[in-house]
Structure formats: structure tokens, C-alpha cells
Image (cartoon, rainbow, N blue to C red; front, side, top):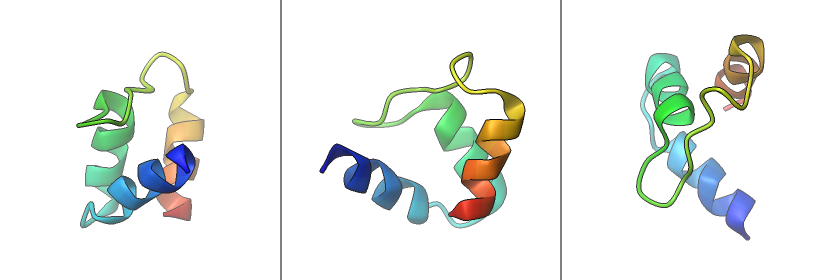
Amino acid sequence: MVIMVLVYRLVIASNKDEVIARVKAGGETMPAFEGTLTEEEINDVAEHI
């Protein structure tokens, strides 16, 4: 369930740059992943969304 909420919050971001920013900084209930994920992994998430 938590993963579904995190993915939903990424989907509402309107473009790839916003997704990358949200993954790095987190937001609302989503934790920040900068420093946890590599730049390549964050980019892969943004491409997937």
C-alpha cells in the first residue's frame, strides 16, 4: 500500500524534472531518496513513471 501511495505522488508530478525533484527531496508522506538512490536509479524511476 505504501508503494502505491508513493507511486501515485510521483505520477501527479507533471514532468520528468518534477519527478526527479520529488524523488530527491521527498514530499508530504514520501521520504527523500537523495543520498539513498544513485543519480542513475533516480533517473530510472523518473523514466518509468
